Length: 219
Image 1 (cartoon, rainbow, N blue to C red):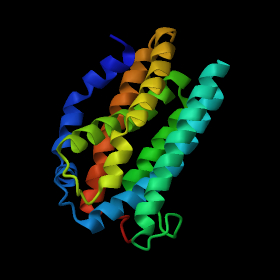
Image 2 (cartoon, rainbow, N blue to C red):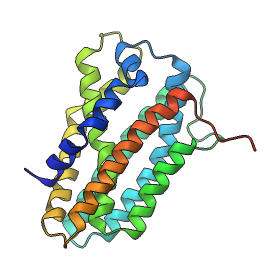
Image 3 (cartoon, rainbow, N blue to C red):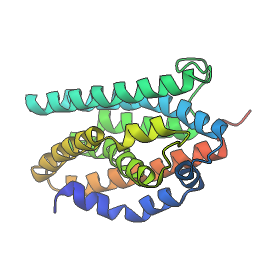
């Protein structure tokens, strides 16, 4: 059992709540209100900007050149592909991916936690914190794809996250985390577990934020 296998197994209750959330259930059924989906997509595009910064910061802290190249390449490829998909789907509805506006409170919390981990935590812990974004989307994408009708209104989103290349990329980054966990100092694997669990909870919060239309208080 690798560290990443064990970490994923440990968050199954949270993942079950993600799959049961009304947003994901309606997305799977193809009946999610388009306004809700576009609201989520725009916030996710803003999240990706912070996520990319965190990944770049972590890559710069790795000591092995091959690991730096792996994470940099993986991060760049994933973020570029996701951003392109977001831009296309939002643009089809006249929404500028770089237009005015600010991330939701949950989006800001999530990205801030990742950047803080990338800056201040051991690099192993920082990498653990960014992994759920990969793994949760692989699993949700596969679950939705398995039940989606051919004419699903959000087929482009489903194709992105159920793509075997995205799954393979996730596996590569997880394998890097496994290598780091093996040689981590005392107490670090436990901190990796905690970071992984926190980010998985934030994944649920992100879906929920979009569903509720979360906004900053007008004060």
